[in-house]
Amino acid sequence: MELKRVDHVGIAVKNLDESVKFYESLGFKATGYEVVAEQKVKVAFLPCGDSEIELLESTEPDGPIARFIEKNGPGIQHVAIRVDDIDKALEELKAKEVRLIDQTPRYGAGNARIAFVHPKATGGVLLELTQRL
Ligand code: ZN
Image (cartoon, rainbow, N blue to C red; front, side, top):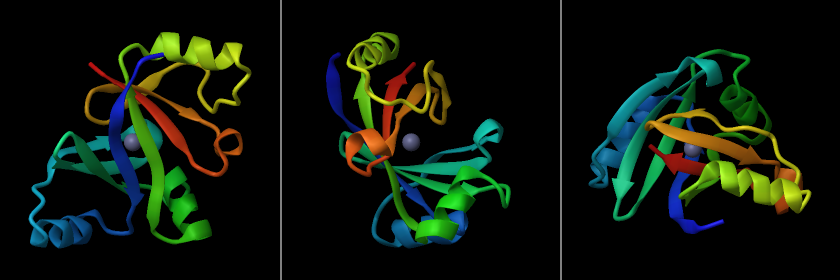
């Protein structure tokens, strides 16, 4: 699989507007506001060179981001690697018997196809593969 770069780092936040305000005070410009209902999150992207920071706030008390914050507090939730062909990447990982959360790609914020690799396989990091469309 062709690994392009770190696409973004996902940060779980309690309040998206407050977090955006903080990052904008540092000089970031928020773009790509989006609600992904399926994942119960609203997100904003903060571009930084070739990569971005993705801020994620849960829209529901039982969403994955809410559960993450309950367990760990706010903070880095995942690291996303950009690939050029996510279907091929998943096939390669399956052939290597790497434990996956997503067997097939799903929709991700920023018009992407994404899939998560299980943190048990990576030494504790939730790894997202992302193919931007
Ligand atoms: Zn992400």
